[in-house]
Image (cartoon, rainbow, N blue to C red; front, side, top):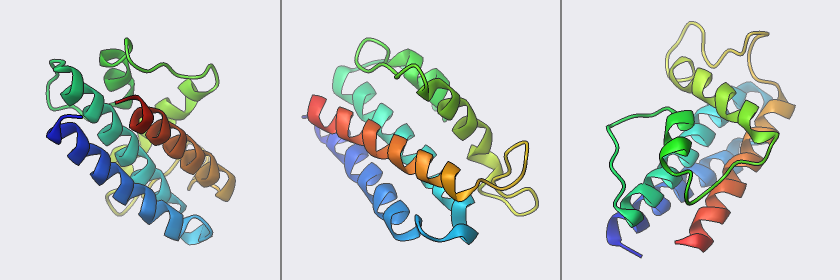
Length: 129
């Protein structure tokens, strides 16, 4: 594995460690969403580095998954999670509308789904490259 890819995966592991610490806290579900998005973004950037793919400095998971489509695919039900995490990315970082879904702050169930998805992507990419 190339050094840059390894560093991206190590950074993604840190985001997973944060999620592991927060996952039972219903007050911090927006932060779980943020770190899940960050973990997945960093994992995808590890693929990009490993395979020398061209990309602009982007944060959209949807766009990053398209760039990495030859190396990782989404399960049928996970496309919605990608869209939700993309929407939450900016909002979960700033006060005001912190991490709000259309119906409000992510629920504990939402947070658990984000956690599962981030762990799954991290595992797939870690074992692949």
